[in-house]
Length: 345
Ligand SMILES: *Cc1c(COP(=O)(O)O)cnc(C)c1O
Image (cartoon, rainbow, N blue to C red):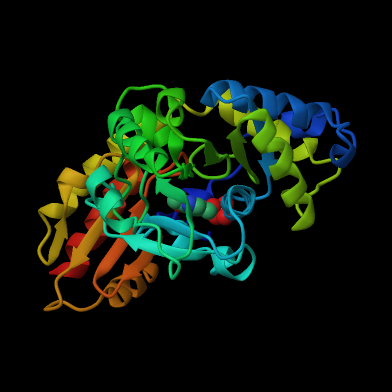
């Protein structure tokens, strides 16, 4: 019998639940481009209500949601500020430059968080030589920093500093529900200070496809047109939205299990030879382990784990990422820790 692979690469690998497949089968659908898909409309209303915004838009992916947000908030040639390792800069194929024509300006953060002071310093004064800064993007939870979180206060403070200079604020909340559960607050508290927010249904929330972009009614009206322009106008996509509704109704609370498991893994890994884990950063479902160069590289470790049917991501020359999600449990975590103990010795 083939052994089941333990997949810690990402929470994007989660499979739709039987309840989702059932809802997808039964979904009432219509042509959403002309506003006739009732299931999409239900999802968009529910999502807007959850994050406390007037309106929401179902998009194909987090990448599309972020790109549509940048297109809607900016004009070509504008400057968009973000943290140095922001997903939107690091992993989205340069879409904001190639398709929105904006120029990114990077601000080094502290565990992914930008302070109002750092933002004020990065914002240059009015000068004929400079591009117009019009948008700040923040990321919560912050992927490359290790799933670190922004508190509502931190978001509010940086949003105030951005508005002083007339900037809009977009939050890449691919894992927004993780960020909220981790600090026992509501997603709407995290979204309140920003103009727009994107979150993924297809990560820890388990849906097969899709993300949400939310904001004011006026913003979403313009965003809908940008989504259409870049090919995101989907027809009977209520089939997909039906799974997203299940995500929002029954998959958010369980994210705390993923966080508990991640912390258990992090603690176990930090006592293994040649591995270091920054436990102070481990707040959600992402575990970053630093591999001692004396042992080898991250790539070497990922390959060694794969021979044991365990999958992880190479996240830098010496960094390996393990992500917990609904399709890995305590038994899988124990197998991971055992394998690492054997391999690292
Ligand atoms: C996954 C992710 C995205 C992009 O989502 P896709 O659906 O994979 O395009 C954006 N931002 C962050 C922080 C992410 O982790």
